[in-house]
Length: 252
Ligand code: V07
Image 1 (cartoon, rainbow, N blue to C red):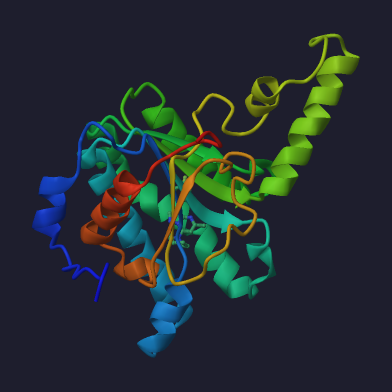
Image 2 (image 1 turned 120 degrees about the horizontal axis):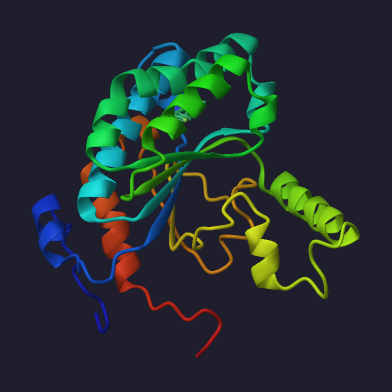
């Protein structure tokens, strides 16, 4: 048939060889979806899915760092996730501390800087403490930035930026018109470039109130793989796919 092409699945080793290290996404954002479904399919309680999800955070952070990615932003807990059963919320809130208990030495060794975006004032004090510990222990690091979006919602982030801009204008700290650049500086990601590649696992193809402003020109990549099964090969596939796209930013 004219125009038909046989496309062979590429192995992890193939992907490694054909990825161009000069054209990596600078900033990757990930919606880590499918922990509950992963567990349900195995007849396990949901928390087992989250537990395995933390393991995938560990491995993915390592793989991104080894690849040379400069910024990784992970959607760990949305402002909507409070609506889940209290026992599940409590379990999720124990994960930042668990993560740092085991990962902090490696993050420090690998020169990774940890940050949090989202409304931290509404997090339990134990969680705030854990995040602060991770932040303080890595703030002098100059390598990859690892952002955890925790109690994050993008519309509320935008409204926060608007209100802070109003306060700054009323008090005379800023003058003149608001520009896109100035507005961006009032978002949680104010000092970072926008994501180049968004990965969402588990088959859903939505943005779900994640980084609405920042994703304006982002390449979107979806996979049916559940987050606990997300592997280095999946990451390389996403990056390879990214490199096959022509980014135009609205130009021809
Ligand atoms: C959470 C594991 C990943 C899949 C998504 C849901 C479950 C790591 C963190 C974390 C957050 C902040 C921080 C350090 C680590 C985390 C939550 C859930 C709430 F500073 N994984 N993970 N936080 N999951």
